[in-house]
Image (cartoon, rainbow, N blue to C red):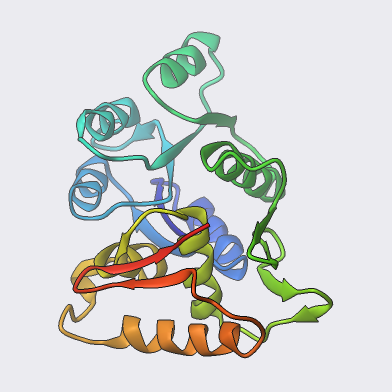
Length: 225
């Protein structure tokens, strides 16, 4: 999953970046309100970690702009030193998914991100059963019975994103955005997404039939269940 950190306190932003990168997230930064708005305009994110006190404006303005955009479901966690209850209420009322006051534990941040993922995809826990395969979101593993599949990081992220969006066609561009990050940095003519998907399918098919893993011609992929 890809994350945009909107935070002008660079030491904190880099600390979050290092921690979340180790947990398998693709992380981007925006130090100012203006750069955050530019990135949000171009890319979709699974999570936006939003500070309110930015040097060139208020983080609430970024939140308002995001929520005014159509077909966006980026999850927003407000991270701020502001302690006023009114600010917390305002953030949640304007569409933020959670509010974490500074200072905070990075493990708590991760737990809240997992909780939002479960709510968003209507999961009771951090595991998803898909045609006898068991995907563990938190441990980043895929198993079939007692056998754990040896997936690469990208293969897991592709499978994770497709499973969380099961029964929906996921375009190659959407996969690129959520697994590799900034689409402007990726060669749109490359077939690297198809290569990774081919390798993933080969590993899944070596364990059990995968007729449910569908290629939608000229668009992308869909996992049916």
